[in-house]
Image (cartoon, rainbow, N blue to C red; front, side):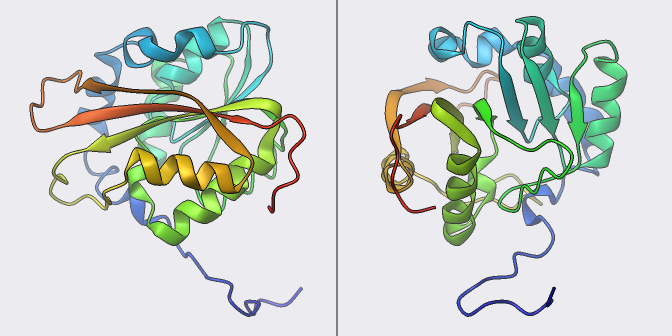
Length: 217
């Protein structure tokens, strides 16, 4: 197979969104575990699949959400590109039964854990992708979902922390992009930051794959 890119194809290279996370992994592990899955996703808990299924958690951090989903009976793949955070996750949630993967958007090759999935979570991840990366990422996630499968994502709004790689992303843009790839919106809400940062707020979105999707991938 040739290593050359096809016309119009972009080489995304290493995951820029992970910048700053390895160096602060110890503190982040504590921060992530200070809030629960139910607190973070309280507005969308009713949309989490009730029957056991396969769920993909991208940017899983310490595996807090992945572990909670596994406790609900799901088979969960936790994708985390930062080795230091994966190490904390394996330590904190050693008996969770989740499967860890070193992977990242927009590539998300999932060589050892191929789809499809009943749901995909990207909590505090989407803002790390630029416009082109978001387009590729949405196409990839749409391709991984079963018909009627749901994509759960949180959008961060506020100043970019020092040393981080983030972009301003609106809910409207994300909804429109989802529509392009056969995903329609079933939930949209906003909430303040759970860690008390007054300058930060969050949008929760749930996009659902159309049952008879014929959109471009």
